[in-house]
Image (tube, rainbow, N blue to C red):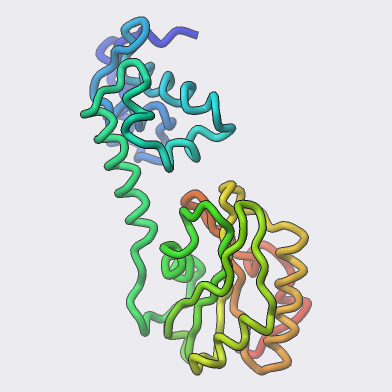
Amino acid sequence: MTYSLKVADLPASERPRERLVAYGSKHLATAELLAILLGTGQGPGKLSAVGLGQYILQHVGKHHRDPLLALRDISVPELTAISGVGTAKAATILAAIELGKRVFQSRPPENTIVDDPAIAAAALSHELMWQPQERFAVLMLDVKHRLLGTRVITIGTATETLAHPRDIFREVLKHGATRLIVAHNHPSGNVEPSNEDLTLTRQLLAGAHFLGMPLLDHLILGNGDFLSLRQTTSLWNECPQDE
């Protein structure tokens, strides 16, 4: 595959900036998004900006199965070691990555009504979204589903964390909450639940029902994404909650 075609030689409808304006950023490939940040190309074979973006992804992908996960924690020296990437381009890329992290980590204020999984994910993003180790956290609500606070219950390894129902409910009771949402992260970025995640959710649903303290959801966060077990499983039908 060759990447030597100049962006200026492409039809206007295929240029990254024009495509972003016309269709939105979600419709652009990762290399095209990098091309907009880079502005110009070069590197081996005098690549276009899009080609240089593809080259960067190939380079970081050599040591990581997911180039985006590798970019998440990349440093200036690691970027400038790539042919065609100088300090200015590296700084632009890192600034964009950090801005994206901060957007995801922005938290709703206390007393916000949490009536959507996206709001709960935003409230927990700072503690969970970009962490290299698995963390288990709880979001505590009052009877009107207003946010009272969040708390990290346990911190595990890169692949495993431990959370016991008694520790979770103890924290919720201590803060005078009457509703809760639990969440943990998958550092791999894959937000699909494991069998252990499903088993723990069943245990929490049973405990919440016994205590009269509804468990509203269990979220899995990772790499800028999240999944609601309530929306994607039938667990809440198996153990209904009085909300």
